[in-house]
Length: 215
Image (cartoon, rainbow, N blue to C red; front, side, top):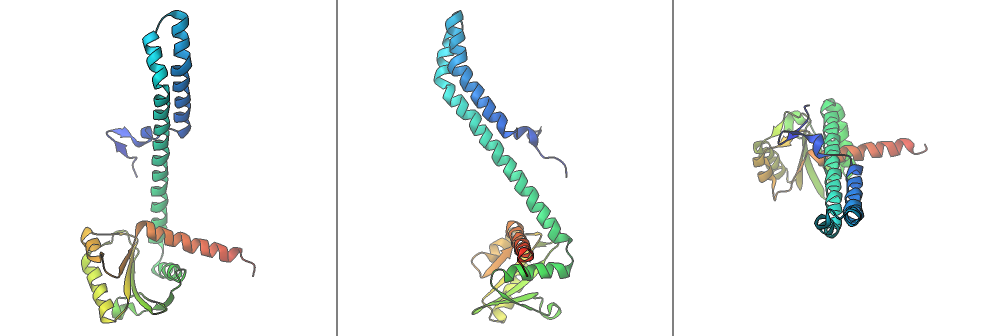
């Protein structure tokens, strides 16, 4: 994947090391507050600059610190985007059986009991039950799938036909704007992106905790 640019500049140029901003803030403050005024007194030069600099030293220092904060935010966003892409790539690379196991484990961690449905007959992958809840689940793990509203309409109609209390669609891809609008306000949960990544991390954590527990 190529490196991104903004206004023709490499993205890294907009994300200098965080410590550089702190160093520049301290240097700017010291120069404006004490060094330049001292030079102005001893040489008689730069007096107008010295008085202005002393008054603005704190503001200039604060500006560099603000840029440092921006650098940290941009670095965090890039790291999270990379983590998300890595997690989704892991899910897309799974076999259908392994993905089904992951999805089942993720919903079980939410307290649901899982019943595997006959997908050839109904198009439903799981039925989730928790107390009085009965929820239908469908999933697609491929990135190329951009889920259209027609798919969600079919799932929602199936939910109504079976008198289920809700339905869930899971994809490692994305949803169209029409699909998002259709799902709004309905008992239709759409899982993708960050939520799918959180599900993966929850399953990995549960598996790690289970392995670490004594037998």
